[in-house]
Length: 494
Image (cartoon, rainbow, N blue to C red; front, side, top):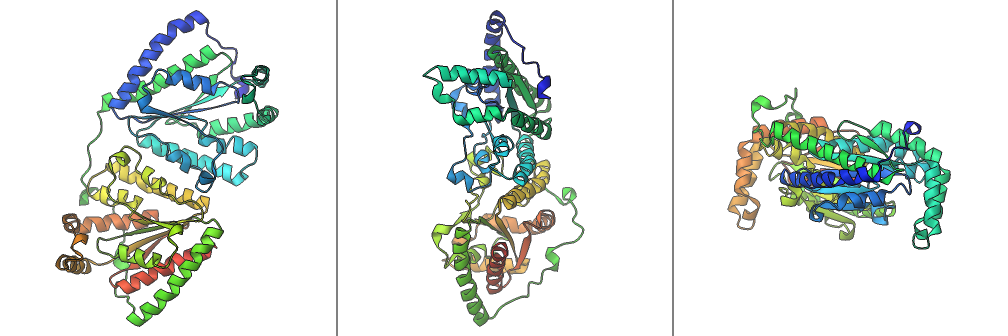
């Protein structure tokens, strides 16, 4: 495909001078519209070494309000970045609503440079296509405009530019031994580029190949492409409205799950105080040992606690971490998203908290709020929570592909036990802070939440991220089962 690109295309100086003022003004207007309408924009620049990425990015952003964009360069990952899933460093840089993120190289280096130079194994870069497509679809579904450029020059032109840069003492530093090596690998890179374009081009994140021999032609093409993408989104919003209505969930629009998983749980399971004390000591000693092994083996561990209000998540987490080294784990309490978090894809705030390899992250509530509280309370649209099942499964699969141990615990109690604990908290001056008006409101919607939880368990339990239902009417039993489940999951991986 690349060999069929006409690299002789050019624009004369006079034509360029006549066209650019109008394009610059139009781009500025559209940026302001994107800010006003809270449209997040992602622009990706890939291309050959010396194809002019830096120059063309600079030309584009000169016409934008610098308060509302950020340029990131995807250099070799740092040690901190290598200890996390490869998409982590890009997820945390995705733009808020109304902002623009410009990437000088991007997640595509996994299937380009890292592939050709064999710094990752073939199964890793092959799997990266799936993860990249999931990333871009999730962002597009959340309203991001995604524009991707590949700046194309011939092997002969690349060599010529390297020689010109080297001949000038002020620019010679820009050409490295690695650049010359890449020139020798031009044909291999070309094959990787063709593969990348074929496997990651889509209607929501299309590739635009830019003929970059002539800088004026490349500049005009880039401006026009960005303008067209922004115009298309703005016009679509004007035609269809802002679509901000939220769906209040009722029995009529809940998906029916044919059988209730929760109804089959035996909540009579219990332990005596003596059994509890013996088992607690055993498993707390073992989790301490495993924490050290996790660090030595550079194994990331993600533990998710979900459950009914008053099911005992806090007490359970306390017993899990009681004897652990606090340097090796972090407990992450999840509440309602703050104003900044609301401006991003809902998974953004969880990607930020993914532990580096060798550490544990313990989530007290998690991304499952999307298909529970946000669904039931109408904080997101029906389309948003329905697609969240797929997005969550993709997210967890990516963590598993990185090697993470995923433990997901649903602490289950019945309605009568919850009421007993609520009253106990209300009557105890030292526990009154644990009970809020919101807890009582949520209790009134028990049946709706139960349907949502059943569907969540059904749709998001997988071989690499299974749900474990913890029978929690009796706290001693629940604490030991949770500890035992975490220990077993880590031991299996080790």
